[in-house]
Structures are given as C-alpha cells and as structure tokens.
Length: 159
Ligand SMILES: Nc1ncnc2c1ncn2[C@@H]1O[C@H](COP(=O)(O)OP(=O)(O)OP(=O)(O)O)[C@@H](O)[C@H]1O
Ligand SMILES: [Mg+2]
Image (cartoon, rainbow, N blue to C red):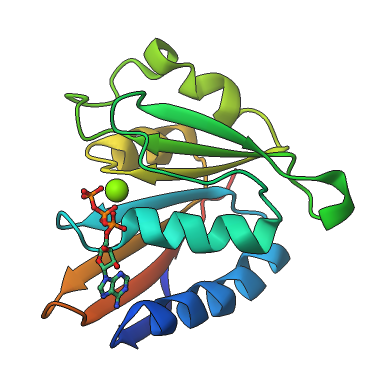
C-alpha cells in the first residue's frame, strides 16, 4: 500500500534542509529503510542525501556517487539510530536493477543496519514490490532555479 507522507514546497536549499529534518522524524519512527530519490537532473537528490547524512551524524562529505555507483558512509553508534551504514547509490548509469547482486545491493537490502538512499531508481520499485521490501519514494519536481516540489510516499507491504 502506498501512502503520501508529505508534500513540501521548497523555495531554496534551506527549505529542503527543513523538509529533510521533517522527514527524518518519520524515518526514525518507521521500519522502512530504503529511500528512492526520483526526479529531474539537478532536482536535489544528492542535496537531500547530504542533508540526511548530517542528521545521521555522517562525518565524511557525501558527494555524488555517479562514477562509483555506490558509496557507503558510517553512521556512528553514538547517533543511537538503528542503522550503522548509509548506502548511497546513483543508478544513473545503470540500465536497470534486474541483477541486484551486480552492485551488491541485495546484501544491503537484507541488512537491517543499512539505510539506503538510491538516486535514479528506475525499475527498482518493481523488484522491491516483488520482494515485499518497504520503501519511501521521494520525487523532486523542479519549478524554477530554486523552487522544488518534493513528494514523499511510503510503500509498505504485508509480509
Ligand atoms: N530548493 C532547493 N532544494 C535543493 N536544492 C536546490 C534548491 N534550489 C536550488 N538547489 C540547487 O540544486 C542543485 C541540486 O543538485 P543535486 O546534485 O542535489 O541534484 P540531483 O537531483 O542529485 O542531480 P543528478 O540528477 O545530477 O544526480 C544544487 O546545486 C542545489 O544548490
Ligand atoms: Mg545526484
């Protein structure tokens, strides 16, 4: 079942930081730990992940993993959060996710201590639904240079 969790109007980076902080409150309460980030080039998917990283206590600079596809950041234990790793994926250069093991995504999907943020999810929702893995679907609409509409939906499946 898909539920609209929030819809944010952002007029600039600072509003997006606030939207991420608001979403973080939901993230902490729910079991869902896969975040799909969809929308146009420059929509703010990486910016969203960087803002989230700060709230998670990630020390190193999060940057676009485009050339590496996947980067893993430590979430310090003292954050008292349920996850120890932030797995940041940018699938821009992937054709699709038919082979989840190709980039080792299957391992992280199975690991309750990993939080996943995936840019350009493409056909991944189809596979997550099939596997009954819950996910957030965050979509960014670019309205002007600084304006974005950010929708957050949550997909939860009966096991
Ligand atoms: N309201 C806003 N929220 C977030 N970012 C904004 C906003 N207004 C302007 N920006 C700018 O938009 C850019 C977003 O870049 P970012 O790399 O996060 O996008 P992206 O969706 O990850 O792009 P790509 O598809 O290339 O991965 C940044 O330069 C940021 O400063
Ligand atoms: Mg990006």
